[in-house]
Image (cartoon, rainbow, N blue to C red; front, top):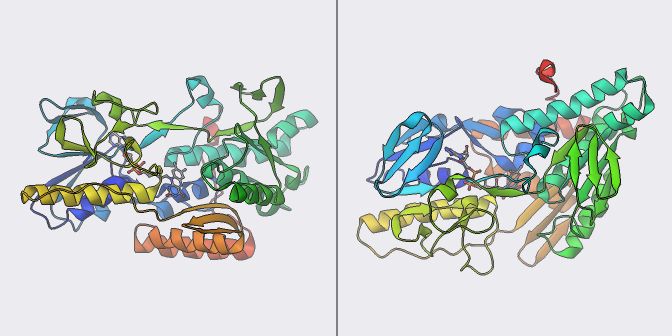
Length: 409
Ligand SMILES: Cc1cc2nc3c(=O)[nH]c(=O)nc-3n(C[C@H](O)[C@H](O)[C@H](O)COP(=O)(O)OP(=O)(O)OC[C@H]3O[C@@H](n4cnc5c(N)ncnc54)[C@H](O)[C@@H]3O)c2cc1C
């Protein structure tokens, strides 16, 4: 099993007690609940609330061995995975679940000025930049310099961009209120830039519009139909327009994990591996690819790149593997739509559950309950519940300690 995100974890768990030995390889020592990662980036939660050691999660699953390492490539002919340092792991069956990576669409130099949100390291880097921008603004005497420090740009109006922009506005308007003497943090500017004509493009247009209105109510300036043509240390270029900003976050694109291309089988434009109805790759029934790394062009409607899809694929390939060991007929994958949820801020969210479309407080409550319910680990649920309850009543964010100040660029 390569990768222990949502897809990998659900696959390995579905193999508990089955007559197989599972080797789980991940380049981090933790399973990460990505849907709440923006809370770490915006000082609402700490890392242990949204991540748990893989070794601990699987401690009771005696047929699973966890290996900490980066899978560099797969040798399909020899049925071996090559790890960093050259070690190899031989396999009879392989499940590849290494997910997605950030995508700057060929402008990789932008990454230094505009980090993305994918890992815990990313979340801490974003949090550091945002909180220290306010700190520096208290020292800055030049009005233009201070305005730039107090301008926060989020590029990309998908779910992550919307969540980040809404939270930045809440930090400025509520969390930091009354803590600075030389400026009013409520005057900070949060700009969400989206190239398309609406935010949350995967949602029905009416909900996108409600999300935009909820963002603006929180104090976010939403720019639609604007294409970013440059990012540097001083700000963002949008064609002929320039936006001076000290803090820029990239939430505009994801590409598949590069491990997919290393398989040497057909991939789509986003680098995702094209799989068949059993989620196996062409010519290699012993290798399945699941989650964000898998492309299912034959599936209608398209399978979204979200956690429920990865989990369903993980459980599916594990069950099929057991069927094939018993020489029974394997099944074809069908995605069961469980809806979509995106939060915008306090009491603000949008939700699609089949034909039911919701926004505002009811959607936010649903989002909150769903995220607590699906968090991995009983302890994490309690920690998050307590932190959120305190934050709800006090507007505070309890994870504001920055300790890497000396590493600033
Ligand atoms: C910020 C953010 C917010 C999101 N919010 C939501 C949401 O609200 N709701 C929702 O449903 N979905 C959300 N998603 C999408 C969801 O998290 C993904 O669809 C889901 O995680 C995909 O599962 P996966 O198993 O394919 O990959 P992942 O969960 O990303 O897991 C991949 C695993 O592989 C490991 N790995 C990667 N490369 C290697 C390698 N070479 N060697 C070894 N290990 C490797 C990684 O460390 C990771 O543990 C969000 C994603 C992000 C980034």
